[in-house]
Image 1 (spheres, helix red, strand yellow):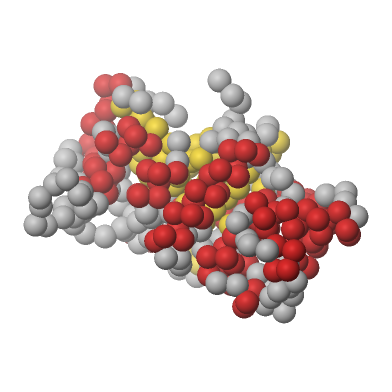
Image 2 (cartoon, one colour):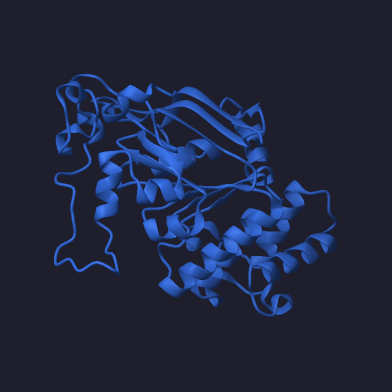
Length: 326
């Protein structure tokens, strides 16, 4: 077994407010091996983006990590001073965000932004950094990179801008890529190209990838494993084919049932009644029990830990006989 590159153990994130402290993440644990793509999926408000932000050290104030550990290649990074974390971010951890316009400075050419990033993290001269920037644009599918390197972000289409953002994320050969909804704002055909590109480049470089998305189609095509989140906790985690075709948690089963199937003749899609609970009103016991058709009395009182279920682990009392796997 390959040692994990990223290890998240018992991560807890809080947002203090005037009306009390909101718990955004509660005891979240997972790991990612080198060259592996872990998908993180769930409804809006499940905690997907907060998890990614905590890992790369970009939690919006007043958000804070209140417990747990984040280790990168065995080194703890969640307690680093801001200046040291700034060095880790970019050199060891690359980030790809949903809207490329928020990641690129409109006043600078894409070449200047790439070259400055490369110079900040790698011992290269200006000319060597420019050559690497051109090569990165070529790798990410930008046509005529020698000419386009001196153009501004507004001169690129949405899909091309996202390729530039991927090139920025890969500029310093990071060990980990955190991609937060990297294809949401793009056309479906461009989505497929970007996901394929990201997967290929990261496999070649041996980087671990955390792919945050709400699109199960992207998860199925891209990921090796998937973590399903609900109300700030991991509801289920396992190999992508097991989670999709044999979901162990009722919430995961509901997500799968809501996806149209081309080979089935159904007039109505399945749906999960109710909505994700607000952070100030998370129910006791299993947070999903108010929406779960299979809820038992125990679900109302005790919060389940992750338990074995086939190849996956699910935080559900239906699998209590298999034992708890923390």
